[in-house]
Image (cartoon, rainbow, N blue to C red):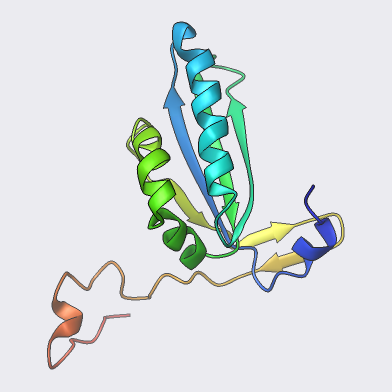
Length: 142
C-alpha cells in the first residue's frame, strides 16, 4: 500500500509514463498477464511510485499502462536495468508509437498544490546532436 503522507512530502511531483495499446478481444487475457508482469518488474526499481492499467470507456480495445516515478532520472535508470530490458521493454514496444513520458508540472491532492518547473532545458528544441560538444555554443534566441 502506498503511504500517501510520504508522497505528499516528495520535493517534486515527478514523472508519469502513459503507454497506450490496441488490444484485440482475443488478446485481453495475454495483455493482462503481460501488463501485470511488466508492472511487477518496474515496481522493483528505485524511484517507482505506482502503476495501473486502464481501459478506455469509449474504445474497449484501447488500454493503457500508466506509471509514476519520483523523477525522470529514476525512470531512465529503471529502463537501463537488465530485468526491464529483458522482460518489460519488449512488451512496451508493442504500445502505440507516440510520446509517453511527461513531467508533472502541476499536482493537486486533497491537502496540497504543487507547481514545478519543467526540467527540460530551455534550448532542448534548438541544440542538435553534437552542438553542445563544440568549443563555442551558439546563444539561443529568446
